[in-house]
Length: 260
Image 1: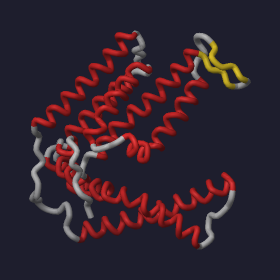
Image 2 (image 1 turned 90 degrees about the vertical axis):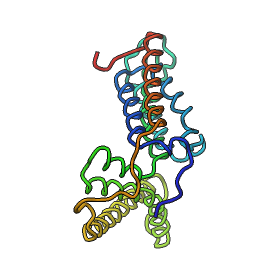
Image 3 (image 1 turned 180 degrees about the vertical axis):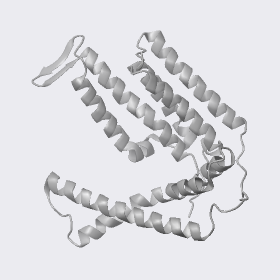
């Protein structure tokens, strides 16, 4: 069952306009590895958060895995990057220089900046609106669209099922090992159980949708997917962000094209 619709500004924009904006920003971030462009992109994205109905606290609660992955990636990049510039830390196997630290910082900021547009789009988009736009505007096959809609609707249940599985396993005394190894083993077992349950649920849903005739014959639409002035503003804002990202990197002399 769908939850209440968001009242955020971006929630009123067409999902395809938001996807286009996110794609433009992602592509330009993949073209260069430097700290300046990633920093400008990240600042712009953080400024957009209120328009998507997201607060900094909500972002940390939902996106901490992204932050953790970015920190790990940045640390690994700084550790393995070429050692150029002044030495900042030389402690056994840990050797960090100005050049390696800048490389690690660029990778960390870029990882967050690439992931954040997806978080904003998902937080401000109703799955049904996205399905309507994909089917009406992009003319994608009905079965693909309905499958994507079902998947998006079920994503929110995974967190609740993970917690339910954890309580059920603890009640049975399963996965109660102590220490990091015990907890890691218990998490793997719980993840496998969640995967099996998700596959079973998806199979039942697919059979049910097939039996009810989803994707067969011409369809009518309860809501028409439209493009309006807000969508043009979203795309224009993305173009300005891309220009600011590239301009800042080129102006500061940090632009470092990947395919250069």
